[in-house]
Length: 368
Image (spheres, rainbow, N blue to C red):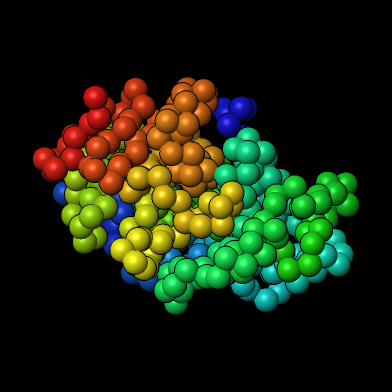
């Protein structure tokens, strides 16, 4: 969690242009000419620069893994695929037979026994909710379902329906029994939704696995919005990451940033939304109001040692807004950086960002 972060950084390697559902962080590396295709792997290089790349469609998004190292083999990719499939099954609330699905089906009725992994994710999600006063809330499922933004929802729901969904959104109504390894939602029709940290958690587990295998240079890219890496590029240099212009089509950059040993996680109002009465209603819902936030932000990018932390922060801090969000970030352990982009194209960044970011689009500028 944020108050107990390890100082050891997760390493980030990014080598291909990200073409993914919801992707907006774009990698720039002219030296890399390989890319995996769904369900298959591509190898390149010799000796220490040998690499293996594979792309999967899982977690309802495109996942790309690229690993460098003399000992990398297809078994590593197979292990990662099985790991992702297992976590997707257990953490998805829509997959029948999965543990999160079972928890939701039993809401208000009984506790459900879960695996150590699922229990860990739920415990972490509740802890994040406590630390951010409920702005990150894993029980926001009823509101997500009601608005249905990005999946057909195209109008503001009736206020009575919003109020009802809000009444079912409260992380304090999740009962965890660690000894029995059970989870219970206390109210009927509550919906646990772990999408706010699921991809980050999966990325961290992949990074842990690769390090255990002695593979310390790899790109882990889950949908373009959660990106981790191990080590620098094989030649020892940092990775140059293109940053998506939130007002333009995918692939259009506002600038670049050099990184190593970090996670990047992004949230933006441009990814999924509808317009009504000249108001943009996006998918980042505020549990306090039951509505999408309207705080003048287009996007928030978190850079952190830990992908699970970054995933949760990118939602909770977005809802805090710039002033409260900056104060919250500055109080976190060293290693967490971020930048906000506002509706008027101003960039508000923590101390370590300005010197690392190269703005190439003159319509954007750092706030004074």
